[in-house]
Length: 208
Image 1 (cartoon, rainbow, N blue to C red):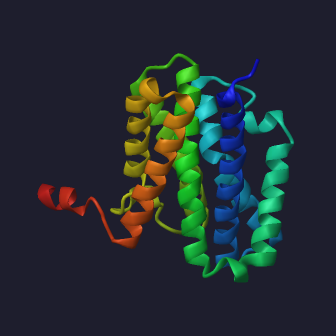
Image 2: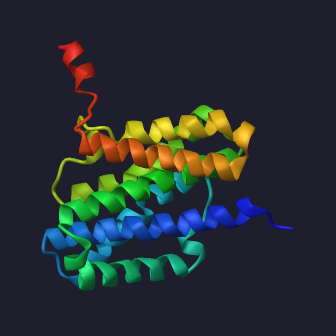
């Protein structure tokens, strides 16, 4: 009989796809792309990290090819972003919010999938970060911007800390609670890092 985790993981996957697709669509709107360009931005942002993760662990066909629902979610995200973006708020703020939710969800999803393939915790953490960030890297490159992962602000490090939190508390609290807490950790670290202008610049200064 399926347990709660069997329902939670697909929910995280679909939710991450949706919010990353909205983030990509908003980036396309901000760059004044046409509808096809906006759809492409939404698609690569939503599936880029997960596709790379699945290819690295040998999980083929990659997850989004196994169900049309992923494409439908991207189409829905594009329609939402195009029709309702004035209500979302300023595009940059809207993209930040959806991107932050996306990296929180996909960090733990990628970590969990890597662990299910019998990989070591260290490799699983790395794949969790890849899953969370590389869709955004592709989005930023296509937008002509320096990817967030290469800037001084806290981004990939939030994913890293959330993944470590999951590994530390999973055996105590169980998968469901561990995933929920770790997702919240990634979201809150990234959210407050931007709001309060936290960064890791002191590390780069110490090397100069």
